Length: 154
Image (cartoon, rainbow, N blue to C red; front, side, top):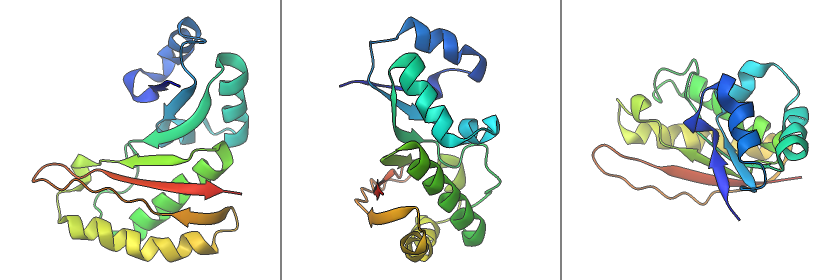
């Protein structure tokens, strides 16, 4: 099983790239801000990827790219955005979310962890989510933190 990441092309190039590679990949890794900008039903978008290109929306990356969140220290904005991303994931069948966000790590990494601690109880209250499994893998170096969490949707 192979996947292709949507971060590697511009929106206007997507159809040409995915058509040229139809059948070569099984999964697509999406960029939430690009999906939000389409202003379409998320389920319809996922269905179109499956039917037109044979791709299942499996993961998302660049979760905060082009969002209104300016810092993880703004935990309310970060939490609101994360919940929107999780909703997107639950409606599109996305199971993995990769968070790097180097531009947002100007503050301390603890602000990201604080946002996650505050957000996790909200996940449990979200009727779209049956279960949240946090498999947090943090590679903490001076310039790099990668966070991956997995959700299981209903």
